[in-house]
Length: 240
Figure 1: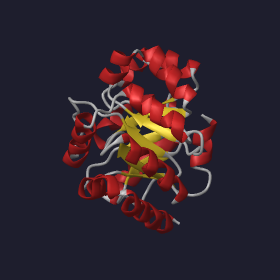
Figure 2 (figure 1 turned 60 degrees about the horizontal axis):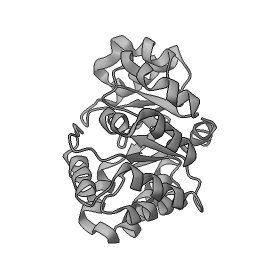
Figure 3 (figure 1 turned 90 degrees about the horizontal axis):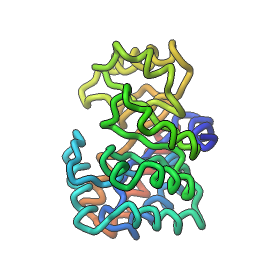
Figure 4 (figure 1 turned 30 degrees about the horizontal axis):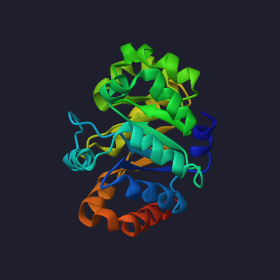
């Protein structure tokens, strides 16, 4: 959890999102390392899932490519073991419940600790059922990251009170800046915790950038590393 403290310590954090194994795990390893060098403060690494309900079709296609390419949790953890020999950038997993349960929750969280994955974001985990993962998260010093949207405002107090690390504020592309800022203000009235928002939102303590990166990977495949690195570098400069 201390890694997450450092993520938001120096201005707005840059949080690139990529899908593990898109287009292959060798490229994923290179992308993580180069994005870290380009200024990424935290890498959000998606675990591919065949029944994904990701709102962004670009991300759904990335997951399909990763699955077709043979990405599995065992292979993803093996890639991260190699990466950790030379790169210590904080990493958070984005995973649906099914891959975690199928792998075994305790085994999954133990491996997260081994490869220094400091947080897990589970978009289909209802807040009321977070206790299904919390014991193993706590035992392995892995933060279980909460998500909120404009439609979950009536539950902000409950979610914010028990949030760990930071909160993902998932906004629709057409969200008004004032509405985003008010949502963040509501969170911070309950708890002083960093709030990360989608790229394009001017508010928030961190910016999650995924769609543009996924399109670059779709276009350039295994040759996407320099293109993604350049985008991350320029985005970091823009964030100040």
